[in-house]
Length: 117
Image (cartoon, rainbow, N blue to C red; front, side):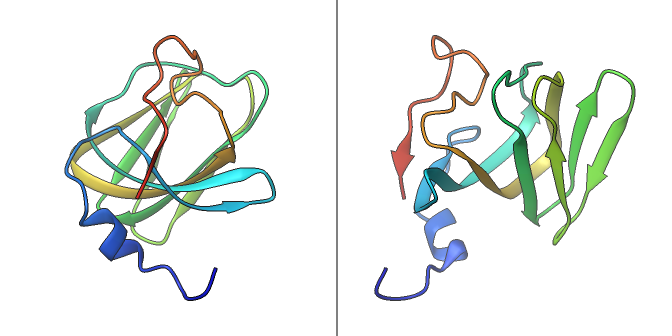
């Protein structure tokens, strides 16, 4: 990497929701930005934790027994195997980190394709 990565600039290159864009790789993990709005599907990741850092907006991460609400600059790690569903009442910008190739729905058959920003 020859210079810093401007996350706002990367987020400005697309408008689709729930379609993460890889902006860097780190120790066999993808560092991604994503725009989300509405409800995602209930899912879990059996082999990896799920990292969320809110850059803009308010994100609810619904768990079966409670809801975690995150604002800008706040993060949460969903432990592997825990069923969860991100929900955004309005557009939210999020930074995600997960092992390269991890399907965003927990199932390769229904996952969004990996794209680069």
